[in-house]
Image 1 (spheres, rainbow, N blue to C red):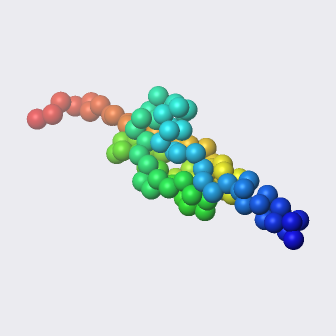
Image 2 (cartoon, rainbow, N blue to C red):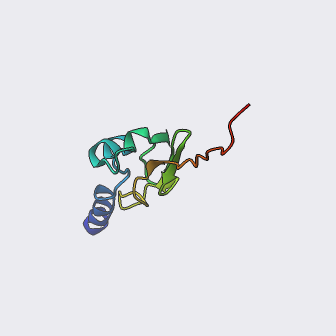
Length: 97
């Protein structure tokens, strides 16, 4: 009986049920200079839950759009960042009328 209790205790006392808070990781990590532009759409940190990210208009998301909290207490991928999109500007050779 004691051995069964011990197995049960060890199994549940060391299980991880959440991942680190994404908002805190973003502030601490400073993945890029544009990381402050990164918007967290869903911010849950329980095992099995996912967090989604997006960037403002004019910026592209570099990395995963979504990461999931794993049973190990780690996220399934790195925190993405936002990068400005390049805009092609052309010049007209003739004057405007």
